[in-house]
Amino acid sequence: MTSDLWPSLVDRFRDRARSRPVALELSGDLGSSVAAVVACDALGPERVTGLTLGDAVPPQVRDLVLRTGLDFRLEPVQPILDAFLAALTLDAPVAANLQARVRRVVLLALAEQEGRVVLDPLRDVPADVLPELARWRNAQDAEALIPVPAM
Image (cartoon, rainbow, N blue to C red; front, side, top):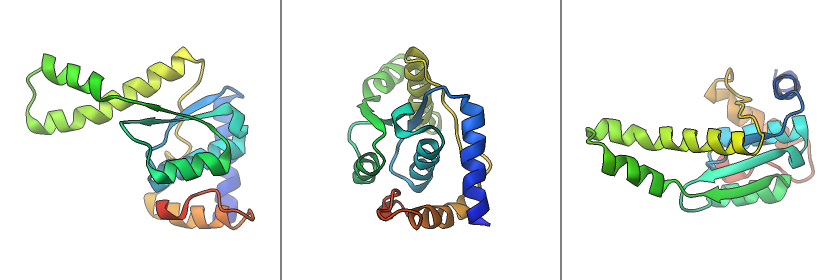
């Protein structure tokens, strides 16, 4: 199944991107790592920009960037989040969800600014399939592209 699923994901991603460069959030988790490698396989690493939206680059992201060769940068979001929190009176659960929303807005804004599109190559893939996909893809190259700690 995995040997059929990976090429299907790559083809679908390539079709959806329509040769446009893409931007993805790289958090260091397994999902963002697999998504980045699907994007690199579909478009080539030179057409993929990974953004870590926070204060530090997780080691898994560093490894992924070195192994794939995709474009990468760190974009701090805390000042933007702090501005929202200073301007609004929010209950704790709402405030906790705000960071994810701010990260998404920053990702979309930077992508648009640079003429990139934001796509999720894994939107229909169940989370429990990701480890199998990562193992299969890593077995296809001499050097594993998806960092093991992400699994």
